[in-house]
Every structure is written in C-alpha cells, then in structure tokens.
Amino acid sequence: MPTPTALLATLQDNDDPDAQVLLEMAKAGSDLRKPHEPEFVFEVEDQASAHAIVNALCALDYEVQLYELGEENSSFQVVAKRVMVLELRALNEVSLKFEALAEQFAASYDGWGAEVVE
Image (cartoon, rainbow, N blue to C red; front, side, top):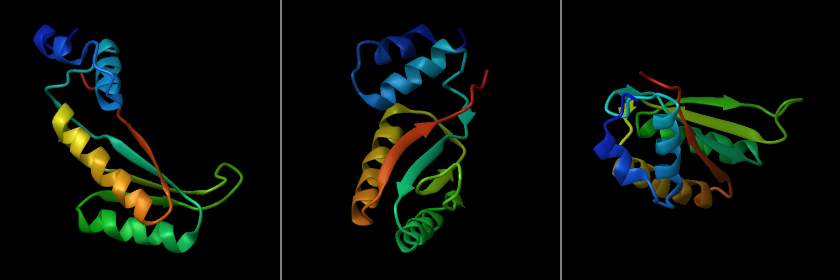
C-alpha cells in the first residue's frame, strides 16, 4: 500500500466522513501524499441557486461544471474540482465551507470523491 502506515493510523477509528473516504482511498491503493483531483458535488433544486453556487465556486478558483435537469438528473448538479493533496484538515475545512455554501442557497452538499492515484 503506497500510503505510509503512520498516515493510515491517523485515519483508522476516525468517524469523520472525510477521514473514512481517505481511508477507503488508501485501501484501494491511492498514495495520499500525492496530488489528486477530488470532485465536490452539490445537488440543487433551482437553476438560479445552481448558478449562484457555480459563481461562488469559480470565485474560489475551482474548475466547475453544471449539469442541468434531465433524464439522469432529478436536480441540478454542480461539480467543483481542484488538484490538491488530500489532507484531512484541508478536506474538513472545504467540507465546512461547502456545507455553509449549500445551506446559503438551499442546496445539498453531497461530499467528494477522487480517482485513485498510485
């Protein structure tokens, strides 16, 4: 496993959702010391709120995609991504910020995920 044992030990038995995702990524073979490109997902009911979230995320220098309503989406989806090292503290800060942003626009922050980087 490419992620050091000491780093894995800090994630084990941690109930924090971000820590759990990091642990699962490490178990899947991801080296958490390397940069990843996580995707942060918002579910939004109305177009105006979706565009407001897109604008806020762009102002924070995220690459952002808006997925419109359709057969596959029952709500608008906003997906933000940025290359970063997946550190628990940084992810906790992003999660808090994004939960507040979602609340501001009556949306739902759905969390994040990333591809395995060896």
